[in-house]
Amino acid sequence: MNGGLDLDNGTAVAFNSGEAELQDEGINLNASPGTENWRAQISGVNDAEVRLADVSMLGDGVTFVTVNTQEMIQMAFDQGSALDGNDDFPNADGDLSADEEVSQPILGEAMDRPGEVFAVRKGDNYYLVRFDAVNYVAASERR
Image 1 (tube, rainbow, N blue to C red):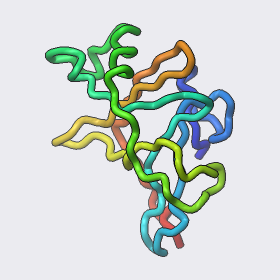
Image 2 (cartoon, rainbow, N blue to C red):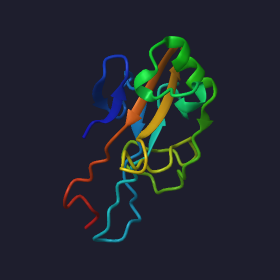
Image 3 (cartoon, one colour):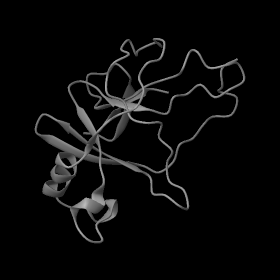
């Protein structure tokens, strides 16, 4: 509902809050009536940079759960991939840009795949975030 994540405090904040590091990219205003219109994408906000992280590249057997040092998180960021999602959507409230780096639509965890992991840097602070679930709300599609 808020649209932003303050990673320093682990709380949801308004999409336009100066405390947010991550921002929900909102909805697709061109979605056909009766179809899901939530984009399920994120971007960095307030000078935060976000990269898709593959923690297995940190060493044999390394998983999100076993990353336990700031150095490992920084390495995950340094080795991460730039976000390459499509941001060419009509402007929704709060998202006035059509050319920022955004994630691919987030899928979450499934039996055959782990959740998406993102490494975030804002100033001298680094964060590692994993999305395990994507919860579409019933009847939230465009009407």
